[in-house]
Image 1 (cartoon, rainbow, N blue to C red):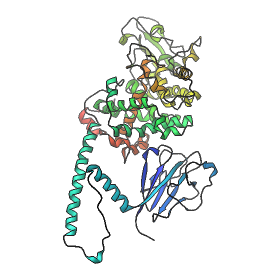
Image 2 (image 1 turned 180 degrees about the vertical axis):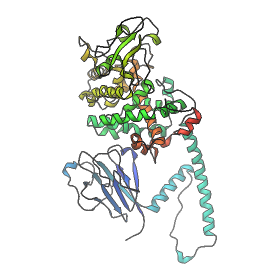
Image 3 (image 1 turned 135 degrees about the vertical axis):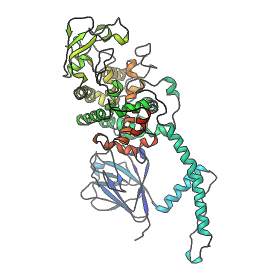
Length: 544
């Protein structure tokens, strides 16, 4: 049997790893599964796969075979246009022709891959090196390499000259590339004090061109944290690996918001201060079956501060209104209102329409900073981190479970927006009046106006105001101006939180799954993520 090393090239055809393109697996034995061990192809983000699902062997380029490990299911077809339910699992090694497709796991779960090619190690490495060299010097052409015959002898000068030549070429190729790499990475990290958060992306910031590799790199986490749960809820698998179906305007705002936040030292410093609470919220979301990205909602609301009260009298880390807290089972009782001797407790299930004009705890005659009349409450469980988080989860679960929103292909962003705009308060209004900017009525109205069955780009299509402080309430869109500039920052903040916590606190349970983004071609490697030590030196940290 030949002892030459052969590498196997495969490509994922579905799921969260499909955007990786061709993947080179080091042969001659390629183990594949959820945890295949050192050197294996680790398949992440797919359900129903064993640690070692299958193995490919390639001892020469003409006889590549795949076999299941134990009783695991593996199906093979000449192309991908098949119904895997009609293909029987193999129970012994099967040869793979170039272009053949195989499915790991049971139909409806698992992963589908295509066998692209099998290449001798030397050929693969030579092609890669020549390709990289050609990018540096387009005039460089591959030389004519002939077989070296040992019996003909080697001149004494050959080996030293070869070593010198290799070193010179390597230096010429690598040094400029390393310098360029360092320069580009430095630009994608904190550069000034900045702010703990940025409320919105300004039009001139949105117009600035992003580095292509940066924008493309963010497709990976956007697919994992937004589009994968969207696809699963909508039963629409193509959403995950087909960016043409994504809400491109929403994604563009996310990308620019990521750039804004990652440049600010104070943003990273605040992330370090709230690590324990962020981990708690992530764990609570997973326990409830909700996406990780929702953990950034309290960052947008309060920067995870439990004792903040808004001009509308929203309180706590999640900024829950008094009536909403009451409806979700939190005790909000005996509140002292400015200018009144009577203690007040919420009894309604939702805030009144036009809360600044109609809520008894609001003084609309005052400037914005003084509109809330609540000075203190005898009991206010909205300040309790765990209790408020569980109440917020109940709120988020309402739009998350809505059949119409789930089918939209955008339920992640719609659920995020509902925390700002409300889901459907008509259920709690004595006259069942519809609040048009609540997410459910706004979305259904958009479908009707545009004669659509579903709208995965609903959010982006309704970012019509240039800022959350625009003169117009909706600027011709379906969402309130504040809601329009609410959701994309939350996604951006979470994508950066993933990198920081995985890099600096990756041993904590909540963050272990995120470490993959800080390794290899994970998206975090394309940014200069600060360390705890750097933050301590630059802005000072200390959890508070």
